[in-house]
Length: 159
Length: 89
Image 1 (cartoon, each protein chain N blue to C red):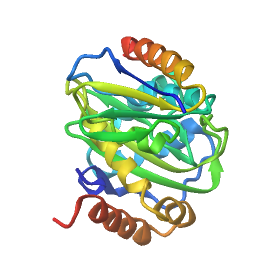
Image 2: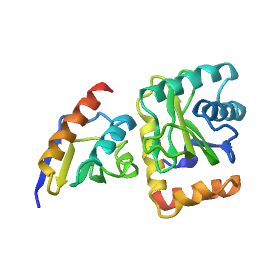
Image 3: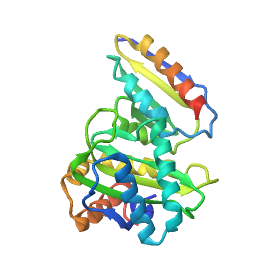
């Protein structure tokens, strides 16, 4: 699985406006709605589902990265978004540091585990030298898309 | 240098979710020993959450190993912790 298989290009936010967890999750869910992959009336309950997961334990894994994820009956396939924050988001991350890169992962209710392969691919990409630093440093959407593409290819080999 | 390892009792097809990995990673940092977790032919440094996440989609037996002066304590504490966390999922 590649990042490009589930991260919707329309749901890549080059500069997040909010600096709070709920605000950022709302921005990303709205971008998924705007991409046409989620009905508008499901947006509220989707943010609730994501916040419910955050209440169990923050998905801010450290290194300035968060991977919010939730399943929802309104989602038809594994989809995701990405948001960048130059100033950093107060995300209650494990290492206490502000989050600059947010990978949103959503999958259909009743389907077991497609997000785990997505999380593993996020890991393969971020473990590559310089990728995380470059990702945190850029708020250029084209550069983010190209970086994902290059890192996907490096992680899995060309298609 | 002491090396200790143990198999974590988990169903072969049960996946590792982010939450247990985060808890394991956080607790592993307390120990001096190098701690690794392996599954499905992949090996991860438990002190690196990015490496641990690589195991998310793997299945099969799960092995924890520690190498260092507090390896005994590390394996015992981390195996118990991971077993508890997996039972919550």
